[in-house]
Length: 185
Image 1 (tube, rainbow, N blue to C red):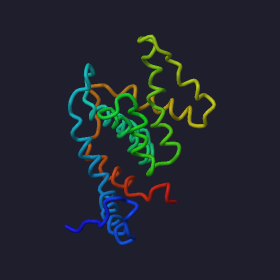
Image 2: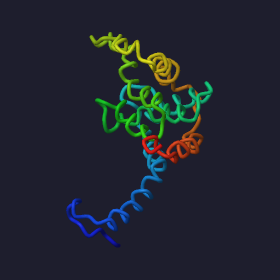
Image 3: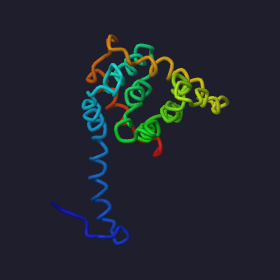
Image 4: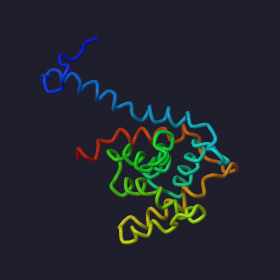
């Protein structure tokens, strides 16, 4: 297999970087497939919860879909907790970083901040500030983030809820992740 000529990036040639660019574009084009594969592995029950991480995500996305949200928001609802596995202390920011190149500023902000907004439902039970989200009250996406948590996230731990399967969302995930990144527009 062909490899670049350099061992330090500063010594790379234009041909090296054109060569790598082809591989990187091919790899990036398969992001949706890698995400869907990862999501399908989240079948373990959330410790102490009544549903798996996958089921929680499916319930969120199903609720968003049934509420008439656009594909971008449905995909964001599906992936909003994708960071739980690898970044449990900042899962919202992790999920938002994955979505950022492919979603609007609004959707990115909602996913990035949903963890703080979700504290409204439980922080006071643990000696925390349930109103931490209030520091964003004047932000243009405050209400949208509050609504996301209320309508899709906080109520999606129900073992009796009939969510759509992951395959239902596959075309939407592929469509969102096949967009030209916002940063390149």
